[in-house]
Image (cartoon, rainbow, N blue to C red; front, side, top):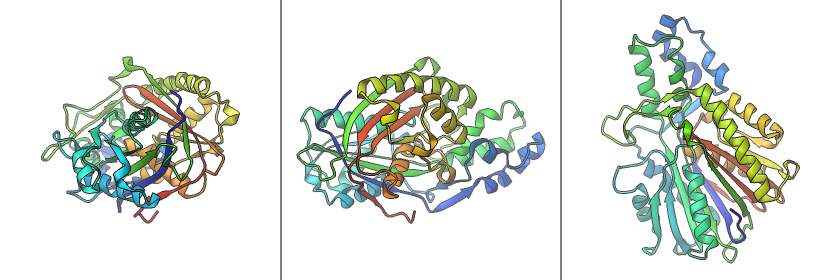
Length: 359
């Protein structure tokens, strides 16, 4: 997919204040570590993740999606009456029904003519949202669109800790399928897109490439729909090693198509942002794509894997820190369980980032 009339006007993000270090998490896992004789420090060594963050208990995803949306809109000083589409693109949501985008739409005061809906696609929900919004803008259906999303990891991490400590069935082999759940963090992000007539930043979205490799959809699964429920106890079973190998394979295929569709070479790419799984995934991904790590930005070390918000938040951090400069060709390299892959190519001009977080 190629675009001529789609621009990223601003980015917004919100982060939790509560921090759980990997060292403290391992202390809470002492019963299972003692029973299985697991070495302390193993989790951080395997993943490169030092911390992850949680929202306060009782916070709903929509609460923080509203904040991130407000930050993106305020940073761009944008008239909300020009927003014709709102997409909420995360795994976590407020209710099974109605869509979380309904509450976000109301709180942001967006026009009644605005098209709104939720998108859920593991760690790619917000990138899927960007493509849907970009298509509508390119076709002239809307002048501007807002994509938001929030992930809340507290219940998953807490339930994983409880299950590992209380279940006598866990072995050194089977516990591997729970490790990925211990890397998950919470975050919220927003992306404001406009057409050429409306943009003031000139950050052009050039290309979007999507690839599905769904024969591997069983490699990372929860139980029944546990996105929202009273006293929910979500649990994920993840074959992390196979998922990484098959995911990288899918990424290589996608990247070849991305280069062809964008008419870019590897040398043309000035900056990259990948999905934030951990140190091993990043190293293998960049090596497999033939991309240098010094051009890449990360946040997984202190945020963990924040699902659909991981890449957008890292993108916003890089832009805010001026790691993405005017004239840069930027490649966003997203991947999610299923397996699906999305890669976006942008020509960057000016960074506008809004946040109410300290970092």
